[in-house]
Length: 396
Ligand code: SAH
Image (cartoon, rainbow, N blue to C red; front, side):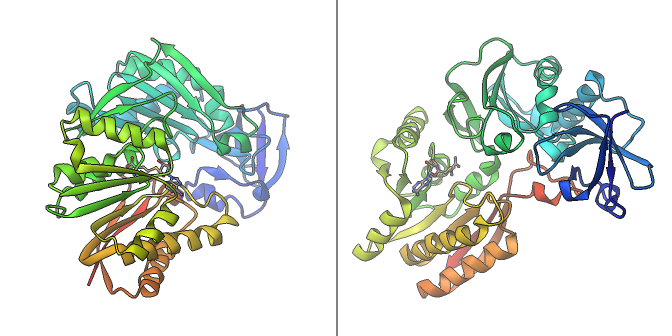
């Protein structure tokens, strides 16, 4: 059997059910395994601890499939994992009307490292970001279509984590019918057109579902700024909640066009929205200088820190944008501020937002701590799974 032997003491994280083996923990590799091949993880005394997928080029050379070394890593094993993942979301599955959208497999937190599968109505979109996930992706696509059932499975594997694993970008049909260029979904009663081929992630930010809904309360009659708007999710909810006006601010013209189209398909009057294309930092600075104010601001920037080295730079950017947002708020106004950078801890994020309020000369309280939606669970053994954090602040 091909195996990876850990240095003495480095079995601790495995015993605590953390699914990653870092290169620094490896004493030696035995049997020359190939890319994504299943290997046994042994402690320094030769005791088998787990079965994992091998990633030769990665800083994480092994990702654990099973903490039971007696398991057989084969299609039936993956089928069972996916079935359990669906079972965990049964309350979601029951309520679907063919337009529902939900994360079905949340990678490490559903016991399948590197495997993300999202459902948009009858269609499935997957991302495979580790060598083991890549090796078995055909099984995941065919298996999930059978379990649901769905009509077709599109692969959207790209991005830098794949690069770090030595895997090329891969986009295209994996199983079933060809996934269309646009899929209409419904979330909390609002319709959205999702572009699974070119949209961000697998097409939509499913992780913000509950936070978008929360925005509906307390916006009545207010002017709302949705900064980093993408396809308008927060803004549509604000309009539905009775906001007097919604400004979508984004650097992408494509995103703004999609946001406008999404307002139209929900019969929300065009006059209630303004789309502003620009760099959020610059535009907010100009608005501050000219005295523009909002009652509610949403700040949902893209991931700003993807390495430990980038955290300091990212913290500066978060502080800057939050300072500007605090300045733009009317007295009593609300700020929904987010960070999806997993490497920035919730504690550091809160500190950055606190510093931003001080710099803006505003008093503020946290009214609510926000997180990712329920279909993005966090395995207790894998705290890294909690990446999206947010604060609902109110200024004095
Ligand atoms: N809140 C959205 C998701 C936001 S994704 C939702 O719920 O669906 C982040 C968005 O920020 C993207 O649309 C991207 O185009 C935009 N963006 C990135 N950098 C930006 C910048 N400097 N200024 C304005 N928008 C930016």
